[in-house]
Image (tube, rainbow, N blue to C red; front, side, top):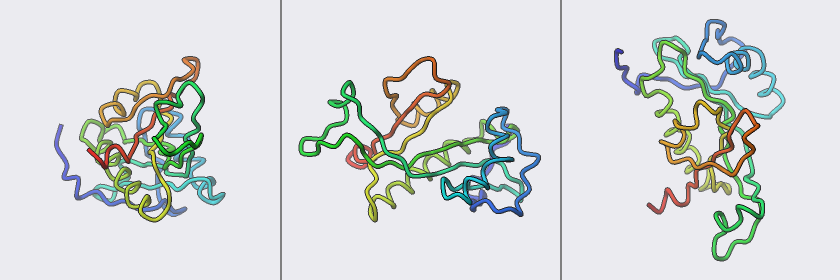
Length: 173
């Protein structure tokens, strides 16, 4: 597989003029979302979709929105800081992330996760953000674990697995 220079990837907010009809990441749910729902959610101020271009072709996308990590009693000790006793913590949510089939396995997904974590760090200097969260499809849990995301205790019947990354702990390490 031919390597690509990740610095050649340009990222911009999706617009109605973007041609994404050919985009196929191998997951029909993600393909359908980017083609049919992403702009509507942007217009409704629910999320923002970012397209990643390489040589003028959309090769990946990701979606960001605000989130809150809600802590239940079973997880409280795992999340509680010494002096902070909240049950909800602010987070930046990765709503969706997909890489077009011919570009999978070329570190684009990893590159995007690092950019998103960097965005969370920058935002945390201006507004409260403690975590990056994602509801990962079961087939991508391993990908996120390699990026230091941890699983919540979750219902195995769900089609996604709630995961989080504590940027404060990452910042201290």
